[in-house]
Amino acid sequence: MQTICPENLKDLADRWTVLINQINRHEPNHYPDELCMYVAMLARRAERLICPDPIEQRDVFNAVHDMVERGKLKPALDKLHDVIDQCLENGRH
Image (cartoon, rainbow, N blue to C red; front, side):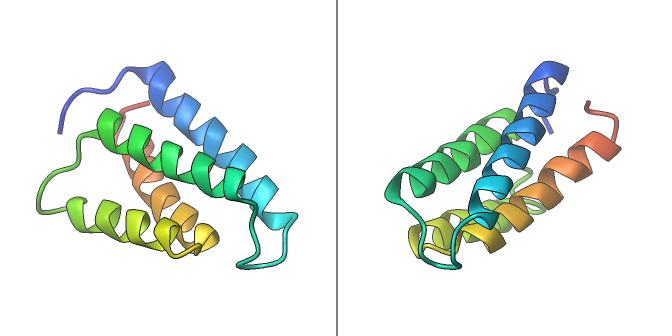
């Protein structure tokens, strides 16, 4: 896995927190288009910064992108959170 700039990964975690709080304010599966766009942007940014291992995390990012497209934002963010936390725990913070 590529080295990650510490500020960037912490920024991802901070953005994740803001987005999950926004999602929790809405009725499940009835999210504004703008919120869907922000979650999709976070997922793409995370994928670029983390540069997932083809075996370990590629499937997770594919699942996240698919869930975002289907409007399943909370489960998508939960999966994304797992990846970000794993990187933080592995000393990439």
